[in-house]
Length: 329
Image (tube, rainbow, N blue to C red; front, top):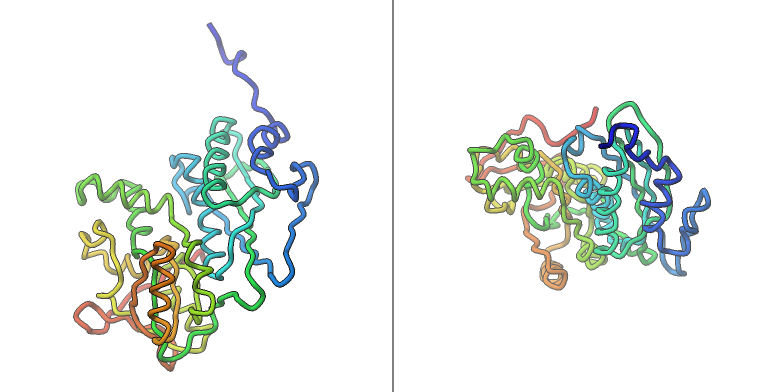
């Protein structure tokens, strides 16, 4: 019979690095995680694109979410930012702040999720840091990508007359949080609930389409804080106004069964779909790029002179929204 004294001791900081993270650092530039920095090559004619996102337990993921899915969401929200600048992902740095209650078993699942997405997206761990905390889990990932010099797509290029496009479906992320919290049990079929919860926990970064939109999209970002608010960011930087036709916003079958959640769909965020603008004469080329990438795109509005974002309801009337997107502060 065994007791607490027989429980294997945690590996400790350096033991955890050696067991869980060093196997993920396959590129020579990671130096086997034996140094405090990594080496990242950038071929002539290309630029390095760098983005960072943090996720905090209870804010960006639920305390009982499986650790492998937490890891994969962390990777994917960063890859979505790279795709939104038309960059190809290369690798990442990772910082974990974990409470002592999250032992080696949790970290093993977390590392397995990282390994799964490294294989899927062709990236590698370059380094990072690990610390303990008395608060909730806090995770920060810095992703690196490459783009040909001058081929990046930024937020500031939208012009009046441009069409507004989105990839995939909108609203599943915010509705998925409700599903994961059990708020849609009895409201939707269990299959729909599971679908939406999966969309919240495991977004699909459009890394295959983003680079194909270089030279086609005039402005681009991803939908993280809410469709209306994020189009507002593009419009503010570009010095233009935007119009969204709510009836044209693509919905999943599950989201379409919740017509009373239209405001959540438009402002909830966590979709990590691409939101971009392009002149009408490029629409056919945009659609061809989408077909090549296997990602659906939909025209949902247009860019106008002025400022701000207007939303028309499915009947064509002005839609008033109390909030336009997620804000931390």
